[in-house]
Amino acid sequence: MNRHTEFTNKNILVLGAGISGISVAYILRQLGAHVTLSDAKPAADINKDLSRLKAAGVVLSLGHQDEALLAAIDYLVLSPGISIDIALAAAAQKRGIAVLSEVEVAYRLSRAPIVAITGTNGKTTTTTLVGEILKTTGHQVAVGGNIGASLSEQTLATEADGFVVAEISSFQLEGVSKFRPYIAAVLNVTPDHLDRHHTLDIYRQTKERIFATQQATDFLILNYDDAAVRAMAKRANSTILFFSRSQRLDCGIFVENGIIRLSWQGATVDICAASDVRIKGDHNIENALAACAIGYLAGAAPQAMAAVLASFPGVEHRIEPVAGIAGVHYYNDSKATNPESAIKALEAFSGNVILIAGGTDKCTDLTEFMSLVKKQVDHLILLGAARQRFAESAAQHNVENIHHAASLTEAVTLAHRLAKPPQVVLLSPACASYDMFNNYEERGNTFKELVRRLG
Image (tube, rainbow, N blue to C red; front, side, top):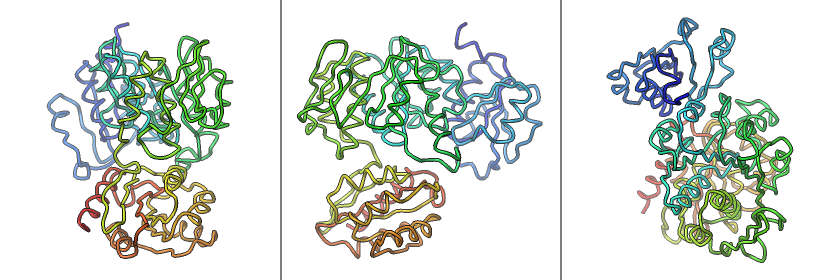
């Protein structure tokens, strides 16, 4: 079947008027489908331009959602923010309507092989790094998914001999069925999104859907140092390549005597010294290992990968240096939307941190996070919907100097007043942003603007 004709003349309902939903609705309409885009929010509350959809003939149904929308529908496509557990999706499945994620649609449209990267933390950095590494092969490379442009948009723009590199979240994996990446990677699994997935086991199972349809001719990159991820090898049909920061592997990529080294199919290749990796923190060595494993399998030369690792500055909103003011350095880590990610940020510093944390509570366990806060943080400034639970947990761990702020503006002002060299000010919220901002990018950009005004 021509992948571009699968949806022609089909009746498709797309739920969610976010970036992915708007993009996939437009693309499906361009491919000849009859498309309705629905969002529970009224048009006045949607801060996106829908004029292109209207001009293309996409029907807009905004401000309400009921089962009447399912009449004569062939496919229901879910944006990442829409849970597959909602009543409308359940009703669609009961009627025999195929329920797909935008990622599944993108896969069905793609001519190029897909490299798919998931994990609780490190996805954006690793995906961006892989994109830079694969560009050194001379092939066309598109990067999308949970970052940047929607995946369906990227796959359509990529020729068959190129690569589509995709950051894939657990939300996007809820609605996949045929999705089969040529190379998949699972970086780590720690408690996250339990407000949506309910249990860690369900969350892990959802992550495993990234390799569920892979075969022996496909590759799966797994973190050997993460026991839950290492065990996934037993449930995969793919060819496995492990990576490890802590131990030598007979077959895989690892750090030995300070060197990033790959042992694969009887050959051993040195890529570079771990100290040459420009981005900060031990967790970024793990991201570099995973990226190099993918790059090697996709045909990138070791010396080219080394050059990328030495020059790659990291991604915006992830331990991003913002400014130095009166000897105090400020860092934007707004992408730390769970405690595990914030832990990795704290571990990148030697202490003397003034930490701004809080936001939308994901109800994850705070024990390890607060234990590290006790050791690393001089002042803890809490804000947002989670601040009370975070404050109670901090007090239980004997964290001193706990402050509350009503807004990010107040938090930055307070941090500036408290901070003295050699302290650093770190925004690493350990929470989602939706109580005060539209997304973590808006939160991080607001923080950066507030810091720049201090100078």
